[in-house]
Length: 385
Image (cartoon, rainbow, N blue to C red; front, side):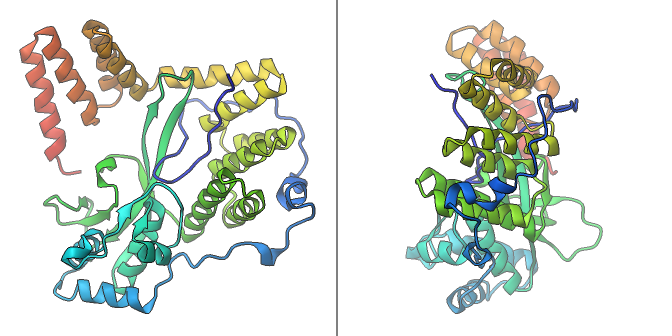
């Protein structure tokens, strides 16, 4: 059975990870300057031409979009009210005068296209909302969020750490340090998210530059095109992503996975290793390298990276949580309790951990600790971050 390969996508899902120890990249030899891989010669049969690269208007607005933003927020006077009114109008049903935009994990498109199609993934909706909010005079930016990882227990060493983007609107109030999430009672900066159920204020996040936004857009779209079998267009989108930003290792991870998909294994190896030299803690690349080396018959290298991924996985509280869930499914609440306690010790702000812990204590007949876990869960659901 072949080891699955993964790439970093922002349909609200991606792969990445972190570790407290930085190690040198083993097996990293001089692979040259990656000129052939970057030129496109192996894909196009010749170097690409600059005019062939995509040039999407990421924050573009049509007259119809401008009018929609203005009309839907006409009664809102404050900045926070405008942001909420705009978001509500975009996602509300057309039967009540809204635009009726719904979530779709597929097709990374511009804000203009999302408005026309009435469908968007997290990148596309963020581009749409930020462009409209700026038109209204709001200070809106793209906010990158690292979501907790999940694991597929059916496949060895398979993990997904989700990278996600949403919009952050800064309120014109001095000395504000809180983040307001639509639907709460806070009165500070606002986070607007098409998939709000995935978002928690305590997740690691940061506002990112327009170049990095563009790199993520083009990389995401490039991998979608690759999955559709359109190698030519996929390369051009991925190359544009690297021209916008070469800093994130996950952009190189996608580029390497694209070459691997084309069966250009030595080239994929060189790209993966370059990405890992940028970020030696990128477990997505390590996972992909383990599979690549297995395909290439380089078993020593494959085992090394498999071991690194396993070590990271086994120490991660979200993997412990997943194992605890599995233990409960096997009717082993005592084993599940050991695992969930470890998970909570490592991550004290994850509501799912306390919910599962309460269920475990219920199963064990420990009503006092079950109540204590639900008290913690209530505190997390009402706390202002």
